[in-house]
Image (cartoon, rainbow, N blue to C red; front, side, top):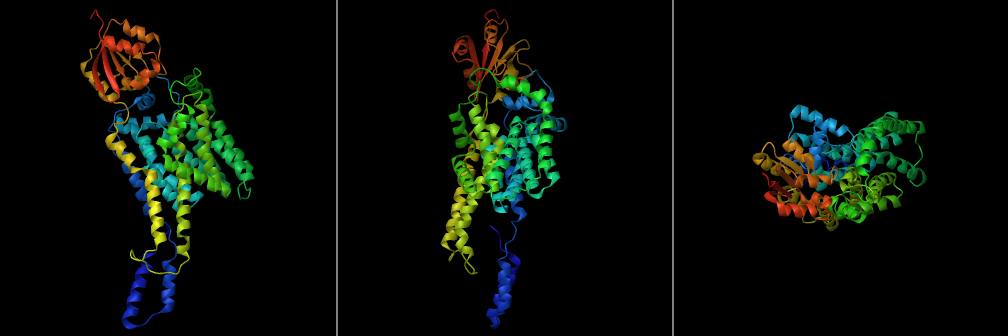
Amino acid sequence: MNGINPRPLIKFLKLLYKSTRDGSMDILSITSLKRKLLTPRPLNPFLILLITFTGAVLRFYKLGYRGFWCDEAGSVLAATGQGSFNNPHPPLSFVILRIFIDILGTNEFTARLPACLFGIATIPLTYLLGKQLFGEKEGMLASFIISVSQWYVIWSQQARMYTELTVFTILAFYFFYKAVYKENLMSYVLSAVFGILAFYTHYSAIFIVVIIACWLILRNFFANTENNINYRHLMLFFALFFVLILPLFFISIPQSLDLKFGDAEPQWGSDIYEFLFFFFRYSIGPIWSLFSMFGAIYLILQRNNAGYLLATYATIPLVTFAVLSFRITVVTRYLIFTLPAYALLASYLIMELFDRILNHEREKEFRFTSLKNLNLSVFLAFVFLFIIVIRIVNPSALHYYYFEDEGNADWKSACAYVASVMEPEDLIAATGDKVVYYYLGKVDYRLSIELFEPSAFEEIKNSDERVWLIIDDGRIKTIDPDHEFRDWIASDCELMKEVYRVKVYLFTPKNV
């Protein structure tokens, strides 16, 4: 992937032209120019800027086009302190969101802007991590995969904390890897700081210290490297991390556990097989999954130190959440911070195969090539690289996301309709209570999964006022498994409006 220096090439062509004109040929000059021409050049920084710009365009395109869904509205309400909704997440992402809202105002675009900017920042940071672990080529290819990943583009356009978590996680691993090999105290401190920021963003960041601990064990017993760790600095890293996250253990985590743990089954989510299938099939994709898996196996067989780090980074959170899906509510988006690991593993294997195909070409003598006499192995290598990268990035999925799929339930249109026809004394019942509260300013009966009270059904049925029911099929199925409430809606309520994945019913008491 290293380029050819253009200036020596131009000089060489001039010299070649002169020699053919007057019959003279300076062998030493040609030999010197040939050596300069073949000298590897660093990859042009313009490439990473272009890749980052491409990712930025994909993330800003239609950023404020869709209305909020329930969790996004919950983020805005938590950031602005509105409503009495329980919030199980750490506070940092909401603090960042509040800053943007105070400066730019509250709407779909500005609320999603922090996630968008952090999503863009992930691209060059993935390149830096890949360059540190393997080299420029692998880092560049991984950053390109991240920049056009449909899954990551989607979550870069959501007013949630997942891209922020990813950025802080990358920086934590980047500085820790640097600290181990350069024995730099400041790098240990910076790694701990970014790990703490990640944990104050989402509790999944606890995996950072777990991954680091597992990697150090693997590195000590299996990797082909010297054990040059400064244990005093290492103890400082762990001490900083655990001491500074203690406030969350006394404030936020108990509240989160109250919401997450319930009966024997999770209130929503999926079983382990569905969880794994959705992650590998729809989140990162089957081709990407296969290349990541074989890349990890290949690096482990080589006893590669960076390979051990990325393998633990990719697998430990996945296995843990898959097992926990039996007991608590987990969804695949909790794993989005591991995406750079999968991208780097896949990129390493792709570039290794590419280099092996081209290896014999590097050993041949220098010669000019054109499309007519281009070596077949070179041509096939580039075709292989192109096909694999296209299959991984899946541009058709991006097209579907922007132009065919309407995304999340259209709560905004449903609420706009209700606001235009409801009377001041009317009541509102909603399965998406947070998003309805954001758009309408009130919710009288919360039918959301977390806060559902069975008595609400009877209160709605016996109400003396008109009740607007804003229902999405997904959540009503969860809270009404016996169809009792839905049968009542079908018989006693009037369907007033239907938008994408949301229906608006009106219940009118007989005395009205």
